[in-house]
Each structure stands twice: as C-alpha cells, then as structure tokens.
Image 1 (cartoon, rainbow, N blue to C red):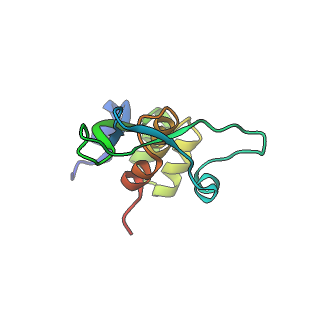
Image 2: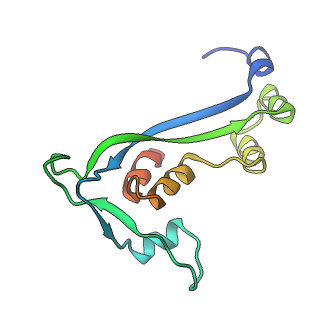
Length: 135
C-alpha cells in the first residue's frame, strides 16, 4: 500500500486474516470416511488415536444439491509485540517473519479450518480448496 513500516508498526496490535468456507448443509449432512492418505497428509496420529466423525452434505433440496448451505469464516491471527515490530521495521524476509509467528503461538488459517472440520461445520476438501496457495 506504499506505507513505510515505521509509520504503521507503532499502532499495530495484530494481524488478522479471514476467508470464508462453505458450511456443510445441516439438512443432508452425513458421516463419511476420509482416505488414509489424506489423514497422513494433514493430521498426526498414532494407531491408538480415535478420530472424530467427518461429515459432508449428500445434497438435498435445501442446499440445491450442493451439500453446502451458508458460509463460515476461518481465521488466523498473530499478535504483534515489540520484537514483531522490530522485524517489520527491519523488513526481514517472509521466512524470518513466519519463524517468529510460529514461535509465538500463531496458528494459521488451515489449522482453524481443520478445527471446524473436526466439529462437523465444513469439509476437509473445502478447507484445502480455500487455503491452497495458487502456484
């Protein structure tokens, strides 16, 4: 936006990101099993881990056969402290900022989305769709 970092950082308390995902239709929501490959790719578990039930919409009149009705937000937030402000003013690389964030309790948008998948609010495919960076 053309604003110098030293102008913005003194008043910066945090950074919030949000995307909307389609919400699983409550009228036709049904349990399904996700593939083991998908579990291995996105979740950590041991052989003793019991996974929650995963849901998707089968499609009905209420959702016009899409399996989704409405939208919910998935979010990421990083609180900016003195050290974060210093890094921004110094214009450090994305890698350094990401390391700082993950070392300070940052959880990304995909993490929040997967939490909502586990609570049956949306599907894993939907979270992956909206959080995948275009190549």
